[in-house]
Amino acid sequence: MALRTILEYPDPRLRTKAQPVTDFGAELGRLVDDLLDTMYAAPGIGLAATQVDVHQRVIVADVSAERDQPLVLINPQLLSREGVNSVEEGCLSVPDIFEEVERALRVRVRAQDRAGKVFERDFDEILGVCVQHEMDHLEGKLFVDYLSDLRRERIRKKLEKERKERSARTRQSAGARAY
Ligand code: GNR
Ligand code: NI
Image 1 (cartoon, rainbow, N blue to C red):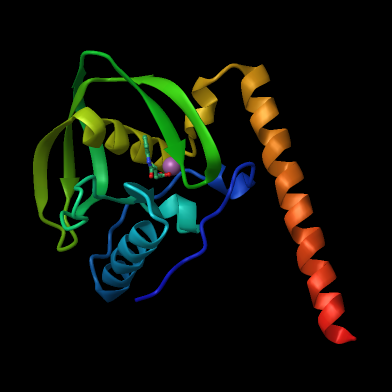
Image 2: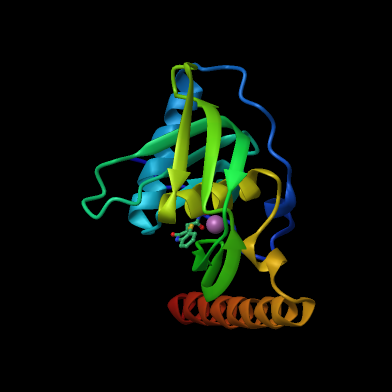
């Protein structure tokens, strides 16, 4: 079990466009396992490789209550979308911010599994929203990009302020230990 560090907005690395996976070897297997471990530990219902600073087209999700139905999508492609759905979204890379975002109600996706086998599947309800949210991460897009500029700026300032306060506390306790 290995947990990876999740990047937080406005970290510019979250804006990186991910590259297709071509090598379905042991390294990919380790990445998928680490993404699942990190998602379950957070806890979150989905995680994209982009969020752990790996810029490959890999996403994981699990919306089950028992947390026993892991979904792995490698090189996901959107085939079709229908309807409109709007739910309050959150993101592990935008901590403690929840905002309503409009998405498709149902999407059909072609992807590969961890062995490289191609499959197609429809996703709807919360899993459909989650898959669209994760696929956005692979393009360097975040749910706050759907909000107004004003709202997004307020969120950025709040998170930057919290980050500064956090690092000031860390410095202080490191100093206290030294004496
Ligand atoms: O844990 C998460 N919850 C969530 C809720 C509504 C819509 C999308 C999500 S995904 C998010 C985890 C995350 O940041 N994935 O990228
Ligand atoms: Ni997210």
